[in-house]
Length: 300
Image: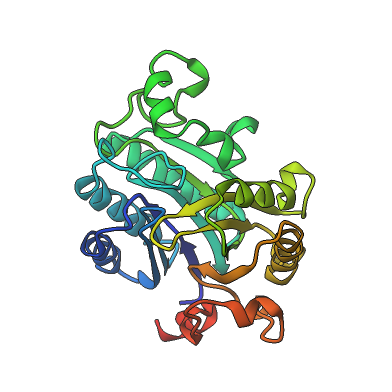
């Protein structure tokens, strides 16, 4: 395909692999759609599916994924570490080849309209697809998570969705649909069970608090491992990449008397973003050549 769009939906399910597989199958059934990677996290109770498709078919694949997730995931009983709005929490469109960011904004809006009208799930646009300046940052859209949104969506005009009626879907919740450049989701696990340590380090390094540019970070507890994690989105990895982020975390962890256990990235990374000589690379958990974006696209 000369034109290629990446879509990276995040789903509020990380403990039932069969559910994630059903969603992946719904994507793969759409013409030109190719699933590149699936990441499942039981602690976050969250999964990330990375797929690509032609611009003509990527919206259909995305809507089918959201549809299947709405049928299989019940947000009334969902619990997990990661902030979330709905069964499909976020649905970003990313230009990969032969398409522009404006094209992806158009695709995001097309998908949002279909999701609202066909599935009755309220839609909030974020990043480049945002219609309001206060919804550009995902953390602002998702503030208070689904629980607060359930309370406010019908009474507070500021929480009204961009698409659909102001009523949270009973089981599927709400969804944030966006267009953005490629980002790297990069996590560093610390040999500590003290959540305040992870949260302190996350606050120290994130851009919003005066830390590293283009870094978003949160601290989480990993109950299955007995450790804590600094979870990051590197939204411009050419300015702040994994090496700089890892080194900043390592320095602060050492200052606090905590060791780094391991590192991981969620989804795929561009080949150019990897430095195999860097300290973080030796700490990568479960790395393989299949985690490189170009390698996965070539096999489609």
